[in-house]
Length: 274
Image 1 (cartoon, one colour):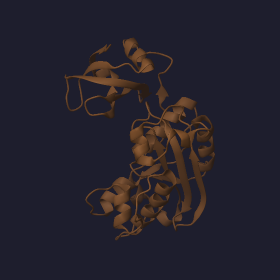
Image 2 (spheres, rainbow, N blue to C red; image 1 turned 135 degrees about the horizontal axis):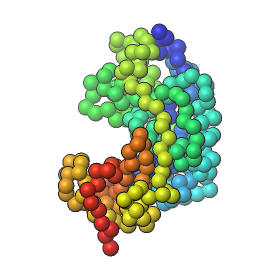
Image 3 (cartoon, rainbow, N blue to C red; image 1 turned 180 degrees about the vertical axis):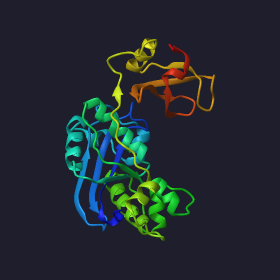
Image 4 (cartoon, rainbow, N blue to C red; image 1 turned 90 degrees about the vertical axis):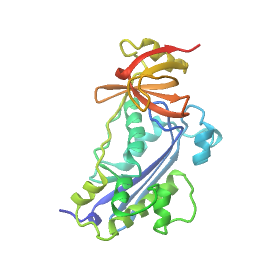
């Protein structure tokens, strides 16, 4: 068994236009390649033109504006460059709340029909929960508790630097992790799985829903799942994607004003709202 300090890692972080990868887009990617003893061997940082306006609430979080991404390359150019930076060599990738970042990269891979990186993605969120006692496990909270930051920046490279430092500290929290297997058990090991956007073909029986996605037309739907099953809710559809044999609708829920994912097979009924 290898000591975690003998491995190579790539910490990475994204900034996006929203919370769900089907209806939102990546506006910035940053990554740092480093060894288990903390030595850096490369950095990657790139703004991305998402091809759509950046919502004010997203700009309020990361500070990236439409003007900032104007003239920047699109994801078709940047993602292959990012994959070249990641490379084929054995390495563990690191993210905080990894399902978010993995989901966005996976969706972009599916759109561009690119093969996924083979590397596992370790999540510092569960790793920190199992190694520290904190009021919450946001990356900034962990960084402050370890004396690594004094202020929050919320840009991809700044968060990636913090992520690297947090990860290295978590390896050393008593008792220090002794093996690769122990690390993977505590931090999980997600894999990239390309998602296929259903932008050219409507799922059978949901042709009007597909049309609503294309038009961004409000839909009233009854969903047999979630916290309010069987209750009609108004949503703005953002996109449809397929993963592991299930088709999912991503939509902005008007009641909560957050993006949510709905399994299409659990939508009992829906109608377009004029």
